[in-house]
Length: 146
Image 1 (cartoon, rainbow, N blue to C red):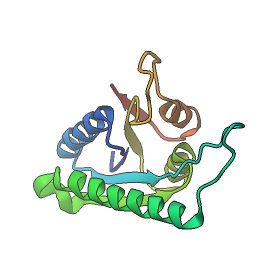
Image 2 (cartoon, helix red, strand yellow):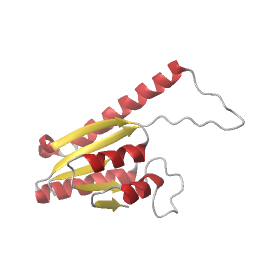
Image 3 (tube, rainbow, N blue to C red):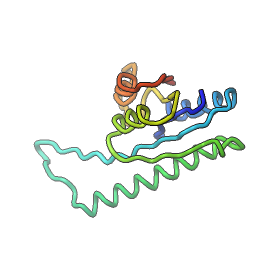
């Protein structure tokens, strides 16, 4: 377990995954990759088929990137004297698809992620939709933390 990937959002499950990664990194001397995927989803429904103006979308995207940067930096600081072994990565796109692509094309050999993300409004499901998709299509071992 040389390099552990931890996809992050601001959910409690994600924070637990981060803590688990820290414990494993201490035990095995692993490097950590903290990954945040910036995703600005636009909901268009039949009764409101409008898409925000480009300036508004750009503003939302910049806010999300700033939030991601802050979360990644805070999470890196959580590793204390091990933070020199922590890399941060920010991607943009579909959250599940970007995580899967990163898993399948990078040199990480283990993944730790929360069972539900910040967007999971219904916790009665066993897994959130992103985690479920990553489990099905990710080609590396994945530990899911509740």
